[in-house]
Amino acid sequence: MNPLKTFVNSPLARVARLVLGNKGSVAMVLGQTVHLSGATRAEFLADPEWVAHEEVHLRQVRDLGLVRFLYQYLVESARVGYYQNRFEVEARAGAAAHLRALEVARQA
Ligand SMILES: [Zn+2]
Image 1: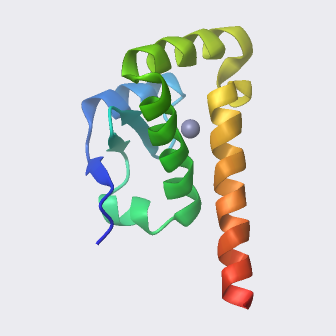
Image 2 (image 1 turned 135 degrees about the vertical axis):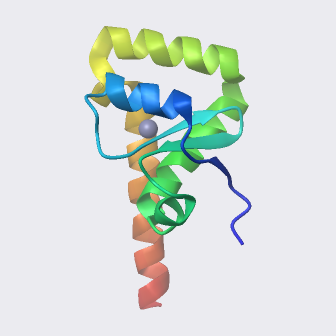
């Protein structure tokens, strides 16, 4: 079983979902738990790109500490927006690299 900690129907993730324009499903990392809104744990774990993306955020939180992460994340978002936020850029790149590695492993 995946040891990744999830919290489904998270009210905080729901707020993020509303702020982001009511996207279908949202995950956000708080501490070392992935908070989900609009998706079940099973749906989340079935999407390797999404899991890898959130794993990058978990690592970012471990590196910076939650308070510094949240502060810098909000400053970045205010400055350049959600998509160009460097934490999101890094998470997308990490998820893409993970998918490529899975593909290589499948073909080996
Ligand atoms: Zn992200």
